[in-house]
Length: 391
Image 1 (cartoon, rainbow, N blue to C red):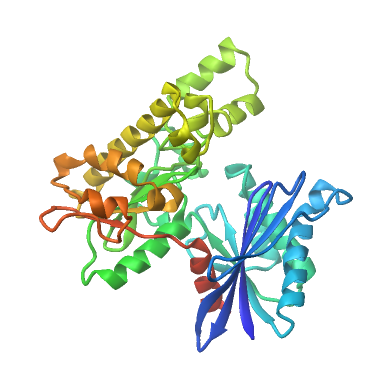
Image 2 (cartoon, rainbow, N blue to C red):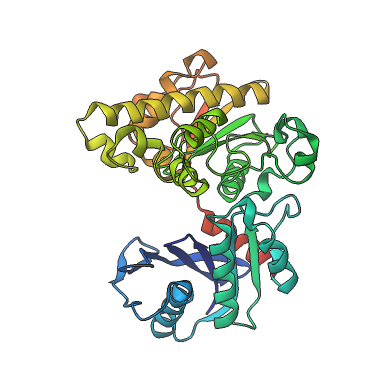
């Protein structure tokens, strides 16, 4: 059996997926989720039917923090050796958050690439180091195996200067301070699904909604505008990220509350968003379950800002023909979708409440001026596709 492994990690978590190769195509075999890896780690393996086939708590207590990611990968590979003794890995695909202005397509990983990606750490200090740590861990565990880097920014790399550039001194723009956009692997996957559904490309806004949330305007199959900018904290209010924020607020906090750079970073990334507004949780399901007014306010604020962003991106497209919901909340939360859609009636958009409640693929009515779809995303499948194409 020949397979491809995908690797998608964060500061304290790791997601992997194993795909079986057959006749130049692939199919999912297992998903792996390792959480809380810096403390009491959990390991879960889920097969292609959604059945949990392994649920354990590996002991990493003797392993220093800088070695935990490699330990997680080793746990996945060891599990595979025991479960699939005839398995032969052909390649490993990695999600890398930032490709900067240089990389607009996947790359085979070598020493030179790692050096270039390390130089981009200041652009994504909370994500890029862990992406690189996982690449190095894979190289240590399987040094002869080809590895492919897939960038979350590459789908947006050809946006116009009008969309990408900020109104700041050109010196900083030329040094890389501009809008990059993220969630690109998700948008690329959705666009490939749309290519199979539509004979002609439509002016589309894709809403990737979850604890990390963004939107993308797609014209002729290409990203022309997106809600996230220089960092993945811009745009919509998210689970614990503030989204759009007047930069003067940060100056005020720095001067009035004497916040340090680290405190400001925690404020915008970890203490704001749905969590900050509600004071309850960064999890949308918990907010729905709460009876507190602050939870309702957090949900309404998110949906209101999402509807405003659809308006902005519709202007970038010069007309909206299709709206797609994806991501954990976008795919599964009919209430959030409904709240957003009710604010979009001015676009000539009408939808079926019954189709929305059952999360059907097409939830708009036949007379709607805008098609509205619900399409599950699959970043891991997109990574596997690129790994297969390059190896």
